[in-house]
Length: 348
Ligand code: ADP
Ligand code: MG
Image (cartoon, rainbow, N blue to C red; front, side):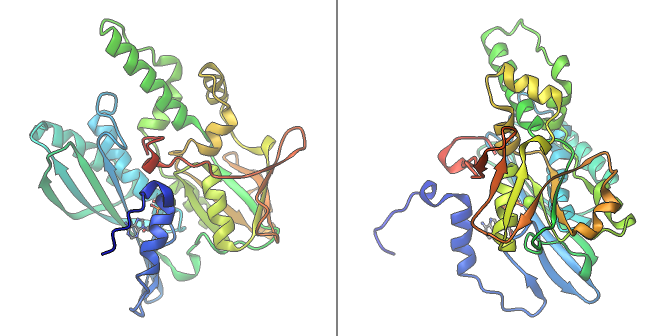
């Protein structure tokens, strides 16, 4: 080992993953795709098996002072389901690894698994295993989800073609604003424990933060409409970062229109109240768990009247030009200012 020390913050999360990726070429014929997408793709005859894993750490990803354990259990499953959904596949099994400190009681673990069970029921998933360990520092939940899809139905981050239409489901930035509201109320409570939290007005935002849903409904609808996304990713880190993933993996540029970006009214108003730019919340907030995907223009007719799918722009040939056309018609480059947790800028 050399004496050289490189800070992780200097390469970032994606830089770190790229370094790991570079040293692990695929050697098994049945490994179709390893590191680099929302889930790995394994060959399984006519079908492909999808594998994805996500870890949630107390103090980094969640704060138990406002995250009820049932919600945490549900969310831990939902974020994994979202990664399988993002491959245009169906989740079937999960395994869960848990590290718990003696601060937690059996009843607390029951509450966590109540949420996990609700999610398993809702998404039609079997919990088939895991691992349990003592922890010296809080709660850690790591979930691996296994999914399945016909191999020609798999949507990766890299299949978009020039002129494909960029679609986004739901609305963006709400989960991030929900987090801001929860953090504010926590501070108020810490200063004055007599104060009751004022959350009613922000119910939608707080719900988006504490109870995210993976958009399996969209995956089923796309299948029903016989609409095959040409590329897809889930929005966990924010629209900007995910658009750049589609661009990089598809070798194309993205062009989107500010006026088309779906932001709920309450998200907009609350961002202003917090002196934040609503657009920045949508671009960089993260944890929306909506789907970002591209479709061939030939499929537009099939989706054009869908109430929850928004057409925000298109792919084009110039891979180096990722831009947003603002409401004032100016061209704004898209950059993932990204929330880099190795720089401690955000709990994600
Ligand atoms: P997502 O935001 O969809 O969860 P990530 O950015 O976490 O995706 O991961 C991108 C890719 O890198 C995925 O293929 C994931 O499996 C892989 N990956 C992430 N962390 C590691 C790691 N420590 N070792 C190996 N592969 C990793
Ligand atoms: Mg993902």
